[in-house]
Length: 341
Image (cartoon, rainbow, N blue to C red; front, side):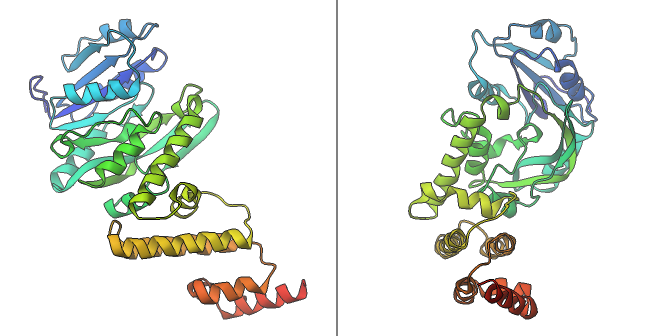
């Protein structure tokens, strides 16, 4: 399918800052897509290396070269790209990643078959000189993606394609540096459906200049703000001090060991989430309860078992955990606790 440069089906936004090292691979991976009806917006954000020469070396008519007069930073450049985009759909791409050839074709197919979906990501594969390849697979369905946004960003930013008509006037928020995509998905989850294709369609390059490396502290702080805001919307008291429990319940974060008193706090928090969501109906209640139950069983397994108060507490507050481990194991646990007194 040939691209109409005046009305392309897809607008691809690629912000670039000093991207010479990997830029050719990134651009070529877009130009070689099996779905070819797109414009590629290469936005040079004040690069001081050979970025411009690399861009100008291409003669493909689908490339639209945009040069910022001064360095605007990633978020302003992304928003500039959203404003310039002519396409029915908007795809994201980073200067150092590699899109698989069928990425656009498969994302467009999802949009054509599901008119309610406004955001479509994919699984992706992390790679780099010093790491083995790691598959990153986020939840696929909209309700699950939305729920797990309570804990972390559940859409890979450079894998994203957006249905422009579902965006309205929404743009990236400059107040969430290094977590602007996470905040954007939380906001969009309120107005459109989300989906992740459960197939790796992008190779995400890890290196010393990744955002998570350069701005890890800022990203962590702003991610906590995003979690806290969601808890506030649920009516959770003291929400700023509860964000750590969101990570424990709505991610696959590894837990080495926790104290019984900490487990009690997590269970109380989980109960508040369930009660408040039952009233506000923000998340699918059955999915919320199932997700919490699964993680609490995992967390219980990591809890120090030194007191019979633990069993008593669970009987009154989370009996399903004891049901899950079974009567025999529960009795064995009680006997071990008594023996170690």
